[in-house]
Amino acid sequence: MVVICGCVLCIAGIIVQGFANSILMLFGGKLISTVGYGLGHALGPVYVAEIAPDSLRGVCLILINTMIVIGQWSCALVGYGGSFIRSDWAWRLPVLAQLAPPFLMLVLGGILLPESPSWLLMKGRREEAGKSLRKFNGPRHNVEESLAVMEATLEKEKALSQGGASYLDCFRGTNLRRTTIVCMVYLTQQFAGAQLVVGYLSYFFTIAGVGNPIGIAQVCYSIQLLGNICSWFLVERVGRRPLIVWGTVAMTALLLVIGGLGVPKSNQSALTAMVALMALWGFIFQLSIGAVGYAVGGETASPRLRQKTYSINIMSNTAAACLVTQLMPFLINPSNANLGGKVAFVFFGPSLLCSIYLYFCFPEMKGRSYLELENMFQKRLPTREFKNYHSEIETVEVDDGEKVAVVLKD
Image (cartoon, rainbow, N blue to C red):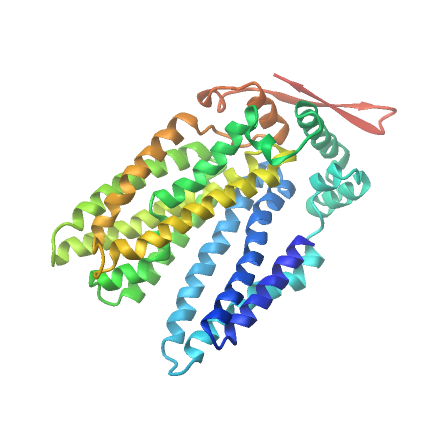
């Protein structure tokens, strides 16, 4: 239902924007569609985290970011195509082209996407949860065992929180650590310079004097997509922590070099090197924290607080994005601060601080079930011990084999 509401709001807002005849009407349509997008952005990773098997959870969550990268690239191409139209339709057609994704989701979502098993269990609808598991995993899947593990996870979390699940619980006990990890990963995306290399790339290349800035930006976006695709194969092999921590460290170092290349004026060699390094920065970003951040956002919070934790994360990330997007035009515009490539220095300091936090506080969660993660966070394991911590989940049939009990052994 939330997905349907989000799609309807997006469609309504886009139509209003596409046929707007005033700034106020355009703003109103944008506001409506943004609310719809916010619903989808807040729900999507949570839903995927609940339905994906542990072995594929990272890849499935990263695919959300893959679609975002493809969407950004497509928007840039559609906008470029609109520049050849000599009428109001130069901007109206690109706006109306946004109708395709929510309309497709509205048509197919109700058919292909059942409610998540975890949500159904929390609502006491066990039989429906079993049907949902069969739809996602096939008829040969051991549904009773999966349901038992999910129920054990929910019961443990419920007992620890005395049955409550408020937003304040996200900041209590071990949940504070989990909420902080999720928020910091997403805030690092903003403070490490994602808006510069993703949001303002074409504009930055234009004012920097790069030849064919839109074409070069398209090449950079394709390189970012390649980095994202590479993360599919690395997230479950290498793990979350190495990709995010060392990826952020590499991006921080590149920011320092890019800023230095922006110091010389009218130096074509420095400009060429800066463009190449920004493309490399984008590749590393989408290989690491840009893509893997979605895996962290979906799997870190406790099951009962996952939606609330991710909502808090979306709010904090949106606030940071608003701050950066407001400052970015001022920092790079020739009529204002006119920093050019030196704007990378502005992001270097915050990115360095984020790298230090991630190194000391971000744990490895690769391949862990939610029951294991719940146990590990409740034990307050140090960050470095997450990777090598050993636990076993055993299932025991009770009541003549009709039900399955779960035993977690350290």
